Image (cartoon, rainbow, N blue to C red; front, side, top):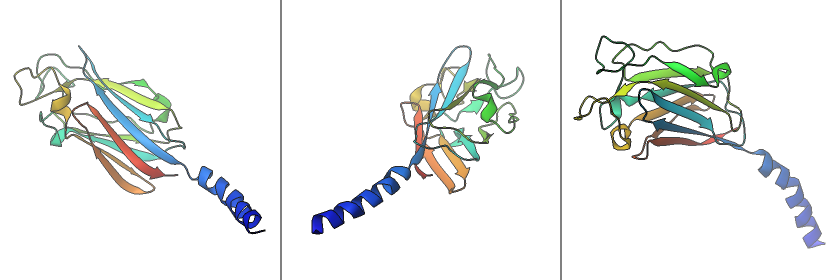
Length: 169
């Protein structure tokens, strides 16, 4: 009788444990020529609700900036902001000024497994090769996610990735 009672309680609790999912946002920077790329993916089990995702390069090891015009703080080659995946997830398009080191991306939601990606030129302002950004130069840049649960942050590592985890659904 004792075992049956505990099994019944466990059976009732199990669906609650399975239903309690999480969202995890992974962000990857890919150095490219002539365009650099940022990929943002919901690696979690539930949809990410309406949120603002901020990429803040001001804390990066290479003092990185966005180079979006042929005039301004950027060096040599420039590339404007261009969405290449997940355009439907954006609620508005960001405005980026040449030399800016942050961008706010507003999304309506992001389903499990869904991605958004954009290309742009990123330059470092400290290194010998300003037009090439290595993983160690983006290290320390911040991803900030602001949604229903308040702000969550993560830093890029030397592998050029950041992960905002522990977001409950």
